[in-house]
Length: 296
Image 1 (cartoon, helix red, strand yellow):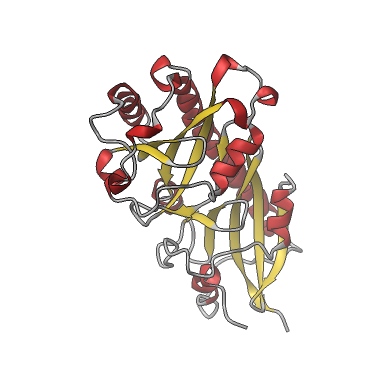
Image 2 (cartoon, rainbow, N blue to C red; image 1 turned 90 degrees about the vertical axis):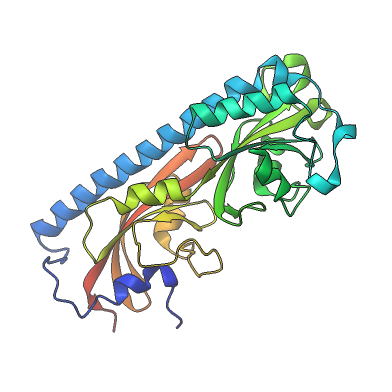
């Protein structure tokens, strides 16, 4: 069986003398599980707070008259993947203000109801785009189908080529108020904030973990958002970093917290996990530890 890249760094340590006894039959392991559960819950709570803070900033901006004024599709120039940097200055200024207030955002862009790019800030990233329409993206589909702020899964940026995720606020005319009343008929645009996964990777790498432990954020498709491992190339989405085959992942998507002992590439792993919930999207936090035995 080909070893999964995300766990390879742990399995490579199996011949190193371990200083802890991970037997589930002793009090030391029970205490370790308890401590890891506290860490996982804190990581989940921290991420939920950060996501909700960023979403709240976007939602406040979405109600400003500059953003709520109707866009003009005739201004779009396909050669620059949207409108000129000198058009819709008031809308662009709002986007720039968001970037200055919330440093977690790296880019802000505005889509038309059909998914066409209208503008992006900073402008030079708009010029670097390789796509003009984003109707196929999960974050577009999710925002339009729910009529509410939506958290997308990890994708590769069409301007920077780096892993990112998007928070999208759909914009509706007539101040419909309730998402139940929002339809594609009164959709006027979508305000989107982009965050690079590196901001979470840096925080996980700062955790005081042993060489036999990994902490991870994972999206609802099982893609790695960020990991504490600096020795594994997690920024390459072509790697086999999905953990969706694990029962622990399935539990997280069901909204459960807990722990499991799971067999990964013929090795026992202790996995402590908790869900990260944002409206209709569920991500997960995982604390994975190598157990000093092999499945026979």
